Length: 589
Image (cartoon, rainbow, N blue to C red; front, top):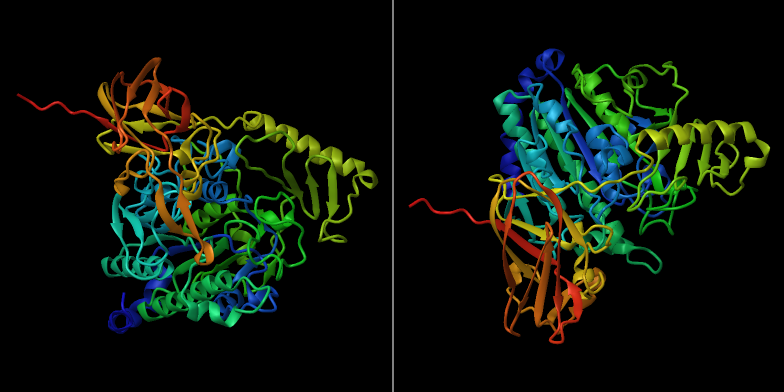
């Protein structure tokens, strides 16, 4: 949206809305707006102590909200998002990692969007999903009426590959499209437009706004990074946050001018601990993203509802977690949880309404991982943290987690270990089975499988593809065959839309801070495939852009599909990073 168009858009909003907003707020169902920024740590806010970064609009929201100061997530993108969407622990919902076949939610779990949609709300997502690129895991398959999102973890992930934060690619209702301008500006503009549509239609809404900023690569207009272009500062990273902050100001103006502000519950949080800003300020915490120490998983969580009779804006030190958000917003909106689901999270509505609410004496477990292992966790019990099953920290005396006091408090260690062992057994002893990707469905045919979902193989970004990471055979995809029939499987070394030969190198691609990454040539002369106990091989010519196979598959079967390339001698050289799988639909005679 251009600045001029935006002025006309905003000018046309508030007139009719303002006259009725006060009366409606008392009776209408509340709207819900959840904002989730990516890779922004606890210390990446001026209101939380950062000595360099300026975030005036986020600071303003902080000052108007009830702030949960002991709020915890998983230390990585996908697990946090799965816990937020389901209210269920990552090891139980099975979305435990960002790649390697473990970034998909269990099919049987309803999401936040499912629950709100089933209770008369319109639901929309604008930004980063990262819980599945294929049916039935896409956002519109999981309850979102409106879905504008990117694939994988971001705009340079293996599924997106060559899209940019400026004028890049995204998906709308499952179809690839392009956006104009900067990605964060685009997500926020689309979210505001959609929320205004719901206002005009008189529909309560759940708007999920998970920005991909400030996740790397650090790309932003220089006008945002210039104030931080001093030695030792992550200028582009801070610039991305400055742009995000500016967009928070636009959102606030939109909510005020439309009359939506009073009856909209705003939840702001981030998805994991510190990243590029940690060397500037990490709020005195140990660890950062991917760590199970406090700096990896303690993040901000602020809740504002001006018309909802919440307590005055202030801090609340109740231990809480991402899994609490869904039960909390359901409670605030008067929606019953699905009878089939047992949340791991609890409602924090009482804490939002009164400062005298008694904190439950609960223990929580923070754990995620590509292959979750017992004790690779942090157990939280009030001020205590049990890390890796043996390290005990008392955060009242030691917020930086420098001193292990396990020997001084053996009874505390024993209780926390007992809790963890029960929890470990309840989630299937850490089992993180692979959720199958559907092929042959009328909802999505063909399906483009990417190396991001190779089982137990970490290969999720364009750098991995460019350098042919993943070994001579890559990894297998777990698939579910929706319909019986003949399937065409096209294997490619590069994303199909690049139209490059299998053997080709690739021109250097833009990376962080203007660096370039060339693509590696491979001596591909053939390909092999294995699926459902069937094996096949074929030869390829140097100019071929794909290797083609036809396989008959039976409906209802769950199996593995693995494909790889070979050289002229028949030796395996690399996995097939992309596989387009199409059920061949026979024409009627």
